[in-house]
Length: 487
Ligand code: GLU
View (cartoon, protein in one colour):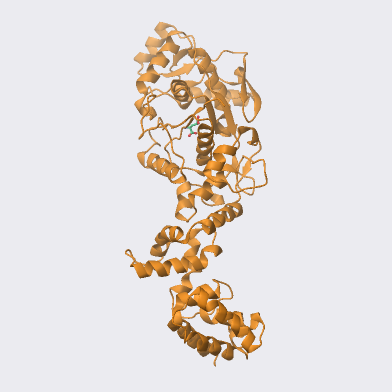
């Protein structure tokens, strides 16, 4: 397999988006699979919107997901610097080359002039584009504009009448007519290169072999290909991966819920689950199986099985995958990850004693199979932190008023009392014996017990619950249940 050098090139203008994370993951998988390199390059030429906080968020989110890069801002590498604002001299060299070869020119048009041109074209029903007013300015005209104090941008000269074809790894052949593309800006009036220019220089100098990025960049690609040609640089292979849509088939946005990786992290999704879920957003494995570790993804991922049509972000599926990973994780580890959620809810303090930690592990173990993300754990586990029995509603009270209930509650207490230690192993047979001795069906025994101990009809298994509550806790709740039911 050809060794791939690929990159993820985020603009640090906000937290790492789910879509960005998916692009990063696909690139990472290709690099690892082919024994190549994965590079993270920070595209911060939009000085107003770029900030270090976003950069840090993006890098720490990638790290959290386990998407490690081989070269990047903090790691270094021999094709650096890896932050575009630190590469200005390199860009200048290539801008000069284009200007000298007559492939680019200074343009002095004002915003008003450009706006008037755009409007005129649109009124005629044509594509708005720059028609090349400054293409052939003579020295005198240029000087005159300079004297007026106009600060020029640099535009690339698009050859008219050409067809640029992209051989896209996902979309096959996609053609663009150069006539639809006006001479475009490659450096702004402050000398800072635009995305389309900087990305070409960087991908070429960093020897990127494959560019895998979001579909929204497809229309930029012919512009970039023209620059590779004009500069005599080798263009990489391209793959444009489809948009991520919400379930209503509109572009994934805040309306659909959380969009950044850090939000999912805060809600208690596990990185393994997010990675697994992201891989399935566009890529489909050969087999039915849907659960994959990073190692398995590295082995199985293939661009051939990346779909052209949009990927649908299905939160139910993410919850299902996350629930699976939560169940698979050892209780000690899940407890550690759940502690911040308990702390946030004020249920545990900062420094847990050994005994508190053990109890918390038991609590987590009792609800671990019942949650799809860790922030749900607080609600599911509230019964262990609140001694007051609160009935969920009238239905529960009705059950407690059943005529068999006093004997159920009393027999349980009687059987628990002599036990030296309440554990899952000692409680299980006791629970079993209740139905036999009372000659009652399970529903008549276990439902009132559950309600007496938790106030709800659903929750942790009774054999998990009782050892955690302890004999005193059980008795205390049973007393409250009796009072509520008027026994
Ligand atoms: N900075 C661009 C973005 O965040 C990168 C696009 C590309 O991968 O070329 O959208």
